[in-house]
Image (cartoon, rainbow, N blue to C red; front, side):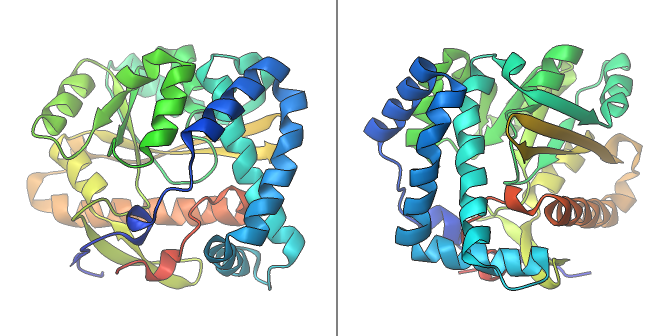
Length: 304
């Protein structure tokens, strides 16, 4: 097992934001005014623009797709990759507005969530920058799961502000990390039967990482999410909201570990085993639905 290493600054977090508040607000307005079907037309030129004028993201996409597809990525592959990302971002407008009726949704593993809810327990949803985390709201409403996202609020602040303007309740569904009371807020929410979601594939701040085989080559994955879940003795469930094209989504839930059942002396090894299992599940989803991977930077060498 690879020991944790210190990461001074995650590459993705140091890149300047491309987002423009004016453009984002225009896209939100356009989506709500025209509706989902008509407003999707603008996604194609947007995707084409980024394929042509974002060379670093293009190279990162090609490097990922080569691993996920097992062959050299061609131009149509890159376009489809970016178009899938644009489609998922576009659909956030409708997820956040509660327009779940616009989508065909298949749920796999829902019984795991129902069992935990019957016990009155909260849970940690561990996902990646893969597909739509917002689609989780469908299952949350169905089972009365109040899910708060854990994130650094300063990251992509313009996007967060634009989405908050869609649904003001979003501001209350985020627990900011890196604050003195962050862990206490997470603990209280879990003890009250709520759940939290965290994206466990990117380093945050001064987080430590482990190099874990992913799509054929070791890649750095943060240790922090697993340390937090272990400290709070919470059950962890893998979650992926795969976009399948059109209006179709597939939500996948898979239990990873229940830290409440792990003795203190075995916690360190259990954390590593749980993280390894998470990466295995994420890799499996990347091979089955490769266009849903949304880390557009050099993921395998992002330690500087």
